[in-house]
Amino acid sequence: MFETGLSKTQIQTVALTSTAILLGAVWMARPSSFLFPLQQHEHHCRCFPGDDCWPSLEEWADFNKTIGGKLISTIPIASPCHDSFPGVDYDPDKCAQIRANWERPEFHIETTHSPMAALFANLSCDPFTPRDAQCIVGAYVPYVVNASDADDYRKTIAFVKERNIRLVIRNTGHDYMGKSTGAGALAIWTHNIKERSILDYTSAGYTGKAMKIGAGVLSSEAIEMAKAEGLVVVGGDCPSVGIAGGYTQGGGTSPLSTKFGLAADQVLEWEVVTGKGELLTATPTQNQDLYWALSGGGGGTYGAVLSMTVMLHRDGPTAGATLSFTEPSDKFWDMVKVFLMNLPAVLDAGASLYAWYLPGNTFLISQSYLLEGTSQDLQRLLQPTLKALDESGILYTWEGHDYPTFQDAFYTQNPKQDVAEINLGGRLIPRSLMKSNDSVDSLVDALKSIVDNGGMMATVCADTTHPPTFPNSAHPAWRETLFLVFLYTIYDRYNMTTNILNKQKVTNVLDPALVKLTPGGAVYLNEADNNHPDWPDAFYGPNYPKLAAIKKMYDPEDIFWGPTAVGREMWEIATDGRLCKVGP
Ligand SMILES: Cc1cc2nc3c(=O)[nH]c(=O)nc-3n(C[C@H](O)[C@H](O)[C@H](O)COP(=O)(O)OP(=O)(O)OC[C@H]3O[C@@H](n4cnc5c(N)ncnc54)[C@H](O)[C@@H]3O)c2cc1C
Ligand SMILES: *[C@@H]1O[C@H](CO)[C@@H](O)[C@H](O)[C@H]1NC(C)=O
Ligand SMILES: *[C@@H]1O[C@H](CO)[C@@H](O)[C@H](O)[C@H]1NC(C)=O
Ligand SMILES: *[C@@H]1O[C@H](CO)[C@@H](O)[C@H](O)[C@H]1NC(C)=O
Ligand SMILES: *[C@@H]1O[C@H](CO)[C@@H](O)[C@H](O)[C@H]1NC(C)=O
Ligand SMILES: *[C@@H]1O[C@H](CO)[C@@H](O)[C@H](O)[C@H]1NC(C)=O
Image 1: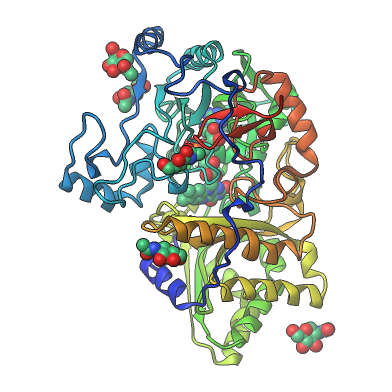
Image 2: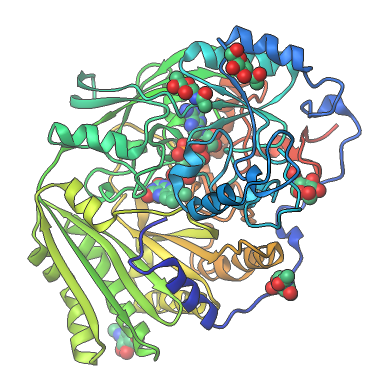
C-alpha cells in the first residue's frame, strides 16, 4: 500500500522472526451465509458458463458487433506458466517475467481481469503454482467490454439484464474486497476512458478550478495534469489507484486530506449510467441523492461512473520528513505513547503522515507532508517524540526536506508502490481515545498486542474531521477520526493454508484488539477485513438504510453487486462461484 522504505524481504524477515500465533479456527469465520451449497434453482442465480442460459459463442459475437468489436474474452494473465490453457503454450521465459512483474500494479492494471489481491483469483491460474497446476478462467471475469463511452455502458447493462448475467466494473483492479472481479461475470472495463480537463467551475457552492476526470484516469495522471497548472488534486497515496473509481467513491484518503478532506469531499459532479441504463448527472443540487451515495458510499453499487468533476487546490512549497527507530524493549511503546499523544497537535497544525508499526518493534514515519510549511516546522511539531527519543537513548534517524511543490514531496518520498500482497484488516481510530491517559494506554496496549502477534500496521494520520462542503455518504466516523489503521499479515504466494490461517488471525485476533477499544466503531470500506463480522455497520454506519434505499431507486434489479457493497446481503456467492439470490 505505502512505501515503507524497507524492502518487502526485510519486512517479511521481521515478520518471520516475530512470534506468529496461528489459531486453529475454521475458515467459516466469514459471515456463515457467504458460502452455501450450489443452488438447484437456476432462476435464482445469474447464468453461469456451462448453463443452458449462458450465451452461445454466436450470441457473444452478436453482442460484440453491437459494441463495435470491444468485447474481449479472458486469457488468464499467468497462462504461460502452465500447460493447460487452450491456445497458450507453457513458456518458461514469459513465466519468469510474469513472476518478476507480479508486484507491479501496472502489470495488473493493463490486463482486463487480474485483481491485485490474489486471494480473489482463487488460484484459478496462478503464476506461483506448479506448471501442471490448473489454469482456468475460474474466478476471473470471462469477458470484458473495453468501454469508451456511455453507450458502451448502456449496451452492456442492457445485455446483462436481458441475459441474466452478473456484471462487474473493473477499473485498475486495486480493490481489496474482491469487488473488481467475479466468476461468470461480464465486466465493464473502464481503464481506457482517459479524458480529463481543467475547468473554471461555477456552482452555488463552489467557484474555482476543477478537473473533469474520466473513469479510467489514474491518480498519477490527474496529479500530473494539475501540477502543470500549479494546482493539486486530492488523490491516493498509491499513484496507480483509479481516482474516479473505487477510490473516490469509497471515500479516498490522501496525503492532502488534512488540508482539503477526503477525496469524496472534493466532488462537484458525477456522470453516471444507472442500473436502469439512464445517463444522469448527479450534483449537490441535481439528482442529489445519487450524488450523496456516490460520494463515499462505495464503488460498483449505484451506477457505472463515466466521469467525475472535482475541486482543485493551489499547490505550494511542501515540507516532508521521515523518522525511524527500532527498540526491542518495552521502552519502544513509551515512545509510541508520546507520539500518539502528540499526534492531534501535529494534525491540527496542518500536517499529515504515514506511520508504521512493524514486528521487532520498528516504528517508521515513511512520508509526511506539511503544505506551506518548512521541515523545521515539522521537526518542531514532532519535537515531543524526538525529545523523548533523545532522553531515552534510543537511536533514531530523522530526515527533513523542503520541496518546491507538493508533487515533488510526494514523488520523492513515495517513488514506487507495489501491489500489496497481504491479508487485510483495519479500523478508524477516533480522536476521543486521546482524551484520557487510560484510553491512550489501552490504545498503545492494543497496538503492542497486534505487533506481538505478528501483525503489521500502516496508519494514515490525516485530519479528515472538517465537514465537507457538500453533504456526502462517507462514514460519519471520518469526522471524528485521528488515524486509519491499515492492518495486515503477509500473503503467502505458495501456501493457501497459511493465507487462510492468517486471514482468520486478522478477523479473530488482530482486528478485535482494536474493536475492543472502539465498540460500535468504523472501518474504511476500501481498506478493511472483507470478512469483518460487523458488516455492514462498521462499513457504512448509520448511512446504510439510506444508501440501500437509494440503490434500490437507481438499480432496482441489482445489476451492480459486490462483496461488502451496499445490497450485498441480497445475493450470495455459491461454492462454485456463481451469484445467487438469497431467499425463496
Ligand atoms: C497498493 C494500494 C494502495 C492504495 N492506497 C490508497 C490510498 O492511499 N488511499 C485510499 O483511500 N485508498 C487506497 N487504496 C485502496 C483503493 O482506494 C481501493 O482499492 C479502490 O477500490 C481502488 O479503486 P479502483 O477503481 O482503482 O479499483 P478497482 O479494483 O478497479 O475497482 C474497485 C471498485 O470500484 C468500483 N468501480 C471502479 N470504477 C468504477 C466506475 N467507473 N463506476 C462505478 N464503480 C466503479 C468497482 O466496481 C469496484 O467495486 C489502495 C489500494 C492499493 C492496492
Ligand atoms: C470482438 O470483435 C472484434 C472485432 O471484430 C474482435 O477482434 C474480437 O476478437 C471480438 N471479441 C470476441 C470475444 O470474440
Ligand atoms: C481498448 O480500447 C482502446 C481504445 O479506447 C484501445 O486503444 C485499446 O487497444 C483497446 N484494448 C484492448 C486490449 O483491446
Ligand atoms: C499517565 O500514564 C502514565 C503511564 O503511561 C503514568 O506514568 C502517569 O502518571 C499517568 N498520568 C496521569 C496524569 O494519570
Ligand atoms: C502450509 O502451511 C501450513 C500451515 O501454516 C503448514 O501446516 C503446511 O505444512 C504448509 N504446507 C507446505 C506445503 O509448506
Ligand atoms: C475456488 O476454487 C476451488 C478449487 O478450484 C473451487 O472448487 C471453488 O468453486 C472456487 N470458489 C469460487 C468461489 O470460485
